[in-house]
Structure formats: C-alpha cells, structure tokens
Amino acid sequence: MSQLTFEGFSTGLPTERPLSHSSLQLYKACPQRWKFRYVDKVPEKPRSFFSFGKSVHTGLEFLFEKGTEGIPSLELVLEHYKTSWRREGYESAAQEKWFFQEGERILKGFYAKHQADFKNVFQIEYKFNFLIEGIPVTGFIDRIDQTAKGGLSVMDYKTGKAFDKARVKSDPQLTLYQMAVQEIFQKPVESVSLYHLNSLTPISVPAHSKTMENNIRALVVEVAKGISDQKFDPKPDERGQCQWCDYKQICPAFSNGKSAALSGLVSPETKEKIDKLGKLDERLESFLLERQTLAEEVAALIRSTGGEKIEGKHYTAKMEKPSDGISEKIVTTLLKTGEPS
Image (cartoon, rainbow, N blue to C red; front, side, top):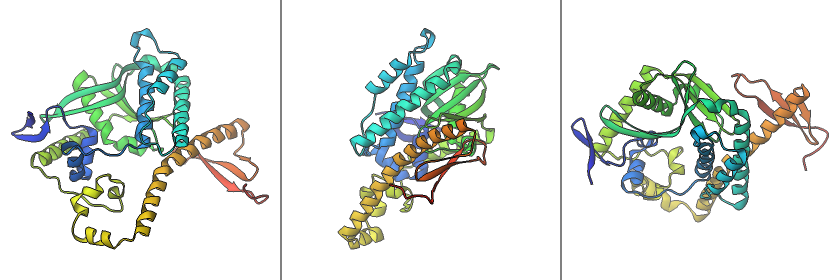
C-alpha cells in the first residue's frame, strides 16, 4: 500500500488516511492511543453520545440536502431521523428512548426556529481535502453559509454539555475548517460558529486569527513528523483520559512495572467498585442532558409569568441572571413546607 509523503519523509499513513481534526487531537493527547486506533485498528466500544450526535446530524443533513428543490417537511425530516437512528452504545432501552425523544425535540425546535435562515445555506456536511505544508488533511464541515457581504460562515453542530463564547474563540476544529474553506472556495471566512443543539443556541465569533491558523499548521507538521518517526509513546494520565480509554488493558504504560504490580494487589471488590463508578459516570451525561431540557422548559414558563421564580409542590425554581449574557440558569431550592416524595 502506498504511503503519504511530504517534505522528504513519509507519514506512515496509507494514502486513504490523511490527517483530520480528530486524529490530530488524538495524537497530541496520546500517540499510543493513536497507533491503537489507526495503525493496529483495535476497535473502541460504541458510546451513546456518539450515536446520538451522529443521528441528530443525519437529520439536519437531510433537512438541507434537497438544495433548490426546497426544504422537506418536518414530518419527512423526523421520519428520516427515525429510520437513520443509530442504536449502538446505549445502556438500556429506557436510555435509548430518552435520547431518541431528545433528538426529536431538537429537530422540531431547530426547524421552527431557523426556517428563515435556510436560504443562506451554501454547503452541508461538506467533505474537504487540502494540503497544509504539503500534508494531506481532510474532514467534514457540518454547514457553510453565505453572508450578506459575499463571504462565508462556518458552523459546527455540537450536542452535549453547554459551552461559552471562550470555547468558540479558541476552538482548533473551527480554525482548521476556516483554513480549508478559504483555501478551497477562495473566499474570506467572516465568522465561525458552534451551534449547541440541545439549547438551540448558536454562538458566533469573527474569523480566527492568523496566529491560530499558524498554530494549526505547526500542529499538523508536528503530528505528521511524529507519525513518520514512529513515535507512539503513551502519555499516561490515570486521573484524566486513561480512566476512559478502551485500550488501557493492552497499553504498555499499564502492562508492566508499577502499574502491573499495583493491579495485582487490587481486590475483586475494589475492581467492582471502580467498574460501578465508571458506569455511573457514563450515565451522568444523559442525566445532565435531561436536566438541561427540563431547565429550559421551566425557564420558558418563568419568563411567561414575568417573574423570577415559580414554586412547585416541594421545590422552588428560580431564574438566575446570566453573567456571560449567553444562557440563563435555573436553580432549585427545597421548600420548608414539605419533603420531596
């Protein structure tokens, strides 16, 4: 199989595997994990949040793919979402049902909120390939819009936890997408955006700086050179990424020396507790999403009353004014008049 070559050295990658944002960040975080995934091709277990995100993205892609034929009806969008639903990674039928309904809520809200914006869409789920310092780079951009001034705007959809404008200003994925769009379409990118789908909140900032683009160039060269030199040393971080890594059992950082010795001293009861903790952490994301959905509904009810709080049977829900001007915060307090059932 032929290899990618540039600047006098080989990446060690087959020609059908150029670098992408995810592979760049994975190598930066842990070269050994990069090798397990892309060279050894050891599969990782499916995750519910990956399946959910891809399913919602598929629904949004269908919404725009008709082009000049006009947008499909909401009923068709929801039917496509249903037939394209990814079932991998869910812990239970109840969890899968909740995520599926959350996706329906997002698509209905997006459809109602942004119908007037559909005419500005230039590209959807756009696959790009271009060179950075002679190194092949690829990726998919969720959406590219045309601006009133004749430029372009790049948007990436996100599900999961909320984020603020600081992330949008520094997100390296948006910088890479900006570089690709400007190179391929030869038009200026005027703004970049992350769209938080769960709250139907787009956050946009002006195009990223040349300094940020240069940082991406340096990262691409650094990663490509590391791959070419076969530098796949692990970066153990047991309190961080390692505790979630599917490759921990086969990673050399944990198969000898102190880690192996300590592993032999861990009792079966302790291992059970660790596994239980891990499962609880995996479920935490779905609970956070559920709370966020309820909080948004309660916030709408509070706004409709013109007040700042509403009392339930056992709790009070109060609206806190945002410090960043982006999102409101709902805080609940147990009433003294009763105990929760």
